[in-house]
Image (cartoon, rainbow, N blue to C red):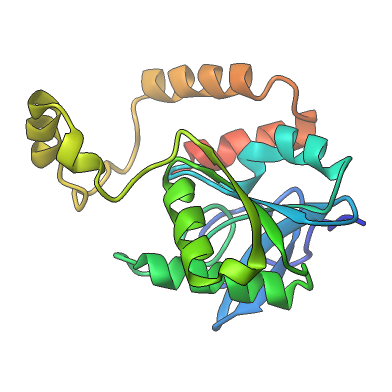
Length: 206
């Protein structure tokens, strides 16, 4: 079983092309993208890191699908899912994921694979809903006490970062070319039509 590209565009987004894989599910008034393949359980659910989207994990999601149901998704405000106001709490994110999995008919228990920021959400999901989690696999996970152990020089650099700073209308061509090259290397094994849509998504001002 696998999901196929949806025909519509999620409301409230400005992405000009729809996702190459997956379908939308309505969760709390937002359309969230989820792609699954494979059969059996426990279902493997990938929780993306910050700045990542679900289909960035397609290579490992595909390998997991040979063994069990395997799921990638875009949190609200990321990828091809509808926008969401920031900041968002971890409870909002984990509650949203739980409702999405229920709406999409992906039965518990889950093997949650959390990368970076997704690792923090995976741990919180397991704390909130322990009966629904078979296991956790954490890849370079974030932690709520991360800043307490950061070296002083990095702490000062982080304080200078302004997350509310607006991006320029256009990024320098050299920067776009650099990142395009990096993404093309990283996703060299992806199917071409999916790889190109993913790269364009990552390079989009959205």
